[in-house]
Structures are given as C-alpha cells and as structure tokens.
Length: 199
Image 1 (tube, rainbow, N blue to C red):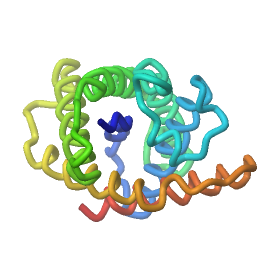
Image 2: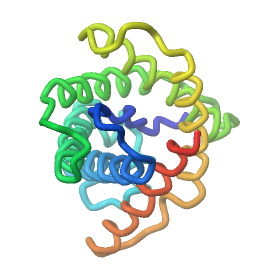
Image 3: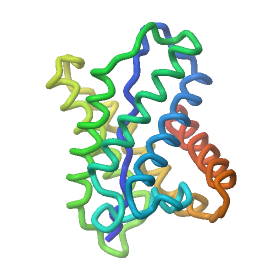
Image 4: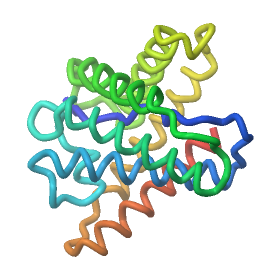
C-alpha cells in the first residue's frame, strides 16, 4: 500500500499571537525546508516536492531523514518567526520535539498497510491522526502540553486527508530545474498551509 511520509504538525512559539497570514507563511517555510532536507538525505535529492512527498518510507525516505528534515523545518520556521517579531527567542526544545515526533510518526506510519482500494483521503487522514497523536504524546512527555486534545486529532485527520488527496492530484507534476522544483515546493507548501489553516 501507500507509504507516503506525513510531516508532523509544525512546532513553534505562539506567545505573540501569530496571525493567519504569517501562520500560513510559517507552514510554507516548515514544509519546504523539511521536505527538501529529507530529500537531500536520500535518493530523492533531485526529486520534485510531490515526488518526495509520495516516496515510500521503506524504499527512499527514511524516518531518520524525515526527523532531520523536521528539525531543519522547525528551525527555519522559528527563525522566520523571530525575524517578523512573532517569536522572542529560539527554542531548541521545539526542534528536538519536531525531530522525535517525525521519527516516531514515520516509523509507525511505515507499518500501516493500506489496500490498493483505500482512497488517498483515507490514507492521509489516518496518517494525520497518527502524526498528531504521536506529536501530542511527545509534547506531553516533555511537559509542554497538559492534556490530550481530541479536537486537534480530528483537525489533523481532515487536513491530512485533504492534503493527501490534493498531493495525488497536483503534487507530483514535474519541474526539472532547481528553480522550478523550488517554485513547486513553495506552491505546494502554500496550498498545504491554506488547507491546515482552513480546518
């Protein structure tokens, strides 16, 4: 079945009240940096955004690569937040949590076996739920979250399903130059940010 990697929910400081627009831009940065970092560490280094997102974890994008990608994405997102004044300082704990969550989520996600008839939306929803549940568990273990948020699980399921469906429709169209791949990555990251913000 499909073994598409699912990125963890972005981890960043919201103490200063991140607005919707800046939140979307932050998601774009986190997604693009995470995916391209993971891709650079695997055989998918020259792939498009969509091809990396669709790569099988067991054959191309490993949990370790996704963890390092998530850490790079978290760091880039925080630096953006600091630059625009929505975050006061760099949080190394958030970087570590992003990496741990991505590794565990990818490891569990790689064990999920979907039949060929399972829709992309259902696969993405399940992976979104797994990713969010793992992320919340890690945050609770580190004392950064007081209680489990079932609403967050549901929202991640809907967003994961919608993004997986759209990835299958428009995410893997091919650009061959670095500029083209980067532009496609930004466009896909923006679309994912809009979906996440909408739900």
